[in-house]
Amino acid sequence: MGRLLDALFGRRKRQNKKLKALLNLAVCRLGVLSKDRHVRWSGARSDLLQLLLLLHQERALLRAELVIKEQNMIDAFAMVEAYCRLLIERIFLIQPQKECPEELREAAAGLCFAASRCGDLPELQKIRKILSSRFGKGFTIAAVELRNNCGVNGKLVQNFSARQPSLESRIIVMNEIARENGIKFDLITNLFPEISSMQADEAPGLWIKTGAEETMSPPPDSEEKLEMRSEGEYKDIVSAAEAAFESAAYAAVAAKAAVELFRSESEPSVSGERT
Image 1 (cartoon, rainbow, N blue to C red):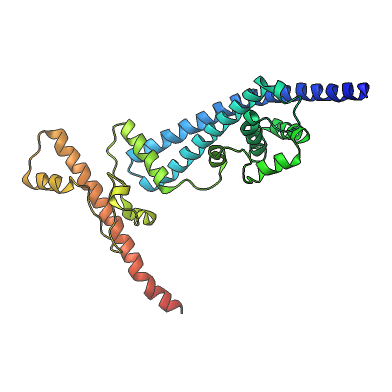
Image 2 (cartoon, rainbow, N blue to C red; image 1 turned 90 degrees about the vertical axis):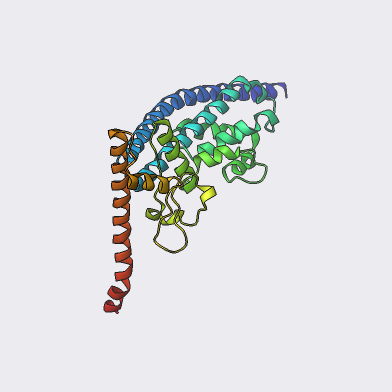
């Protein structure tokens, strides 16, 4: 019996040693992956800024999605690294336990979940296998399938989610980057049908399309600006140039709206000819 216990504890000790080595490898790999994601995140933000400067708002909204996804991965890697470090520090709690200690539950469950979502970290697969042999298959299956009380942090699930970022979150990113770089940003919502249902208080500082009409509600101060243009009240050459630029932007938007209206009106007749 004594030999059997010694063999059992010796096996667990070797298993913990292997687990610790895998956790350290995962931390090293996470450092490399995080740097790569930071580069991609920075590049996406730079692209978004250039698109805003060029008034390419449709493309900017798409680029905002990439910015959010890269940020989510950066946050996810940070959480996984924190879990790895916690298990390394508290690995002595795992050895005598048949069930996962409560203080390690989130970290262990989080690593099991991340192993099924992140192919860039092969170490996580081996870590999950060891945790499964220690705490039982039910523990790892519950984490992977996100069953009730599985212990996986909801933030980690959100960061690894493949769902498209919400429209609101993309607009927030665009506004933040515009504000950081001193750009006056007015999202022209008639170019984005999905924004038409938003109310003015849900999208402050944006143009809101009202009803089913292809009309635009200008920003609150636009009437004053138009009035100033009509009266010719310009402080200097710079203000006059800015006013001319804004007028050109409004004209471009109106032209695009006219094209869309023409297309929508011509569609019924075209479909009628086909039938």
